[in-house]
Length: 507
Ligand code: HEM
Image 1 (cartoon, protein in one colour):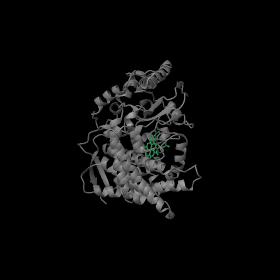
Image 2 (image 1 turned 120 degrees about the horizontal axis):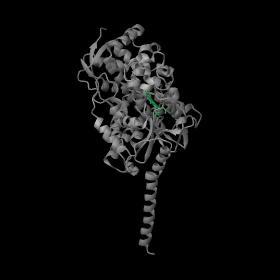
Image 3 (image 1 turned 180 degrees about the vertical axis):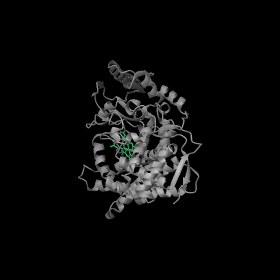
Image 4 (image 1 turned 45 degrees about the vertical axis):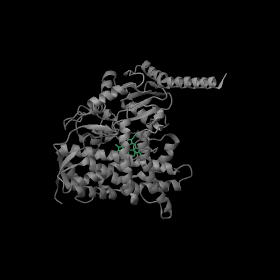
């Protein structure tokens, strides 16, 4: 046999093996997974061979993309989740569908969700996030699993105790003051944009302390990365494509490099001045924890610290800014509640900068914030993958099945929240979060279980501080130019911003 025949023979074997493994991964395994669920009585749309239901979802989302709602309507799920709403009405609260080779199980029963999210053995892992999300968030606490997550959590936890957060309220207030000073002479402002810059400013100061100006560069790079991530959502591509030098990939690599370079130089500066201590900001606390912990238990490499910085920078401002934006929206359309909150703020703090201990006493404000988080949860869906074959409720879930937890749908369920589920009624939280609905875990804005949001207290303290200062200085109404179009762009936000008409109050 000549060389040519040998090469052709080898190539034929390689190609046949590749086609075989492709068919097994893309067709046979997904088919088996779906079959196992269907045999247990779980229905769902079939989808096509290559894309599954991706095309149908894209069509439905495109058709609803420009829906505008009445400002008093909070029933916008048809716009952000038209596919889930359609399939829930056809197949019930538990169904399967597929995206490419991935089979997904949608669950909306809070008991099943609790079982998934409370699992302490790591049987439900985070989904493979894809190159874009990894570039944006880094392999930090949000995206890691197993031993890596435990190690990161040990290092990050001390930076988020309530005592630590209280020490940050002065910084939060200073950042808010400089934003409000800019509002002073304006009649109308697009508050969404201001609040995004404010929360980025707060995390820059609290995370990087004196190096806060570098935070602006992180903010801008992450903003561009979001656009790349959004453009790639539900686009099915060969896995190899993420390594090819396409225009998109080159742009993403450039931003990743910039982001890494910025964070690296902040960290190197800290390392250079370590005799003086690493600093009292979040980064300093993390570096301190790495340095003083038992080797292996709490040590993170420089790369891991960079990833963690990306994580809490993004998670720390993107979500809180939208919480504040939707709060401004709901208080503008519910003047009675705006007035009640102002009375509470003035009676607790007068016109003084809010003191962290007083903030915890804002009962009405806490109720309003939870109601905003319920109706306009910044994170509207989370997901997990089954690490092994596992029993969930009465179902046997095959290994590798993705599980979709639609927070926004649970937050709007009339079965859980009563007939007024789509209305703004902060009083439902009068007796605490766990008593507000028929199920104690129906409120999932910060998720539940061991992977619940580590920044919850940080976010609530920041939101209350900023809101308190806005109410002290301005009354506000919605601008007639506002178009009510909630949009899910990784986080839930007003599609065309939120213009607000301001009236300064007497000093
Ligand atoms: C209103 C504001 C916020 C909301 C609604 C929110 C929501 C969430 C949710 C739903 C999760 C769970 C994700 C999942 O299970 O897949 C999460 C996790 C996380 N959040 Fe937040 N978050 C907020 C603010 C913050 C802030 C201010 C920070 C940091 C400064 C932060 C850092 C994190 C981190 C590090 C995780 C991962 C925790 C882990 O897996 O152990 N978040 N957040």
